[in-house]
Length: 300
Length: 300
Image 1 (cartoon, rainbow over the protein chains, first blue to last red):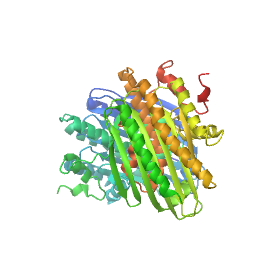
Image 2 (image 1 turned 60 degrees about the vertical axis):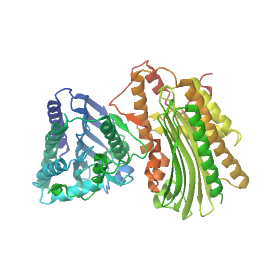
Image 3 (image 1 turned 120 degrees about the vertical axis):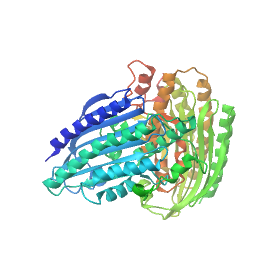
Image 4 (image 1 turned 180 degrees about the vertical axis):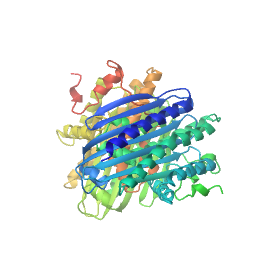
């Protein structure tokens, strides 16, 4: 059982992510909230009112409990009476509407029956899609995936397309990224590879995001662009409350509510029938919120 | 089968509600959006940027379809292959944080097997709980309920306590109201009574709300009180996306997304660990967001 080792490493990675984001922003800093509940402990790190970042949150948790009926169904667990789970999840909402929202999650799940698996993902949600940046983003993720197994980026990219999707809007959440779940190591060697992969992903996350943030943080924007940002954040809320597995798992396992809802935006808006006019940047963005786009080669 | 009659009456009631709200607000007016989808038709009426009302929405729909597996489970339907459903649902978000949010819904459901039922409810979500107003509100609802059956207010009040509840927050949505579902008429006479009751409820809704709105619309408020309103609206979003049956039914039956999400606030906010200090009005309000309060006699 490798649970303790993974948890210790993830907690360290959380701290590193926060340090990098703080340095990049330059104005505000993270507050750390260490917590304990009946089923485990964690540290919630939250950053607000930065120069470029309006809200960033990085949550670490390490929980144990018995497998509930809901969990058995939603996680497709056949055997095992109790579980241990640890993970990092993070979200960044920028101030500037021309900078994207991003999200990262890595997690490790272990059952007392001996079965274990990794899951996670990174995805990008621009308020305004920039093809060059979206393509570069996917290239970065591919480079993190390649050492794990040739072709695995393609698989995880499709998985993200399917997962980060709002069926009621017929929209993807953003330009996607990678997503994987229930990836079970067959032996020690495979465990090491998967564990290393999730660490690489958590490392790459701030590096990739800071590059995109710095490209856009000082761009001018209008009130209308800011309002569009609020509407896109509304979609983000819809995804997280209606479809996000982390939210579902958190609520089902009676996790810590304030940590589960960390990904919520500081401010979000809904308007009835906001349909951008043909030819606007907003309409153009909606055109790209689709599955099955080959982002790596979209600008070739 | 009484479906057509109910639908026609509800559509008329919708118009009357909107007229009353418009007159009370005095500044803005409703736009009407008549729509048709594969499974039915409806009219969505939306009011924004009023003097006292920031957003009001009144939706009417009349849909038919086949009973899906999801519906069979969530509505506990034993027989019947196809359904007809019609209803009005409404939400009002005021400008002033001292005025409450409110919601009303009446609906009629008919299966081809001959079974039919009514459902609905009215509830009040103050940003700041005012005991006198909450008590008066419940008294008004009791007066609408009493002609239907002695004691029925008490039953529907408890139902609302249980329904309008956010378990992950251990909070009720507001001060409750009444809620009922699957109330099936045993004969023609009972059908008439139930139908009349839902009409009374839809009639009382604007009258009750306008009284509360007028009491509070011109009160002074601070920036901090406005921010508290945004946070309470965040809770409203959580309820609607996580627990609301109308939202679930709408999404399951592939309803019209823009109409399903009508109840969303124009602007909502989330903050990590916003816990009001002891002794503040905000802390006092949280103290009252509990089940099993005898609102009728709370100020005796």
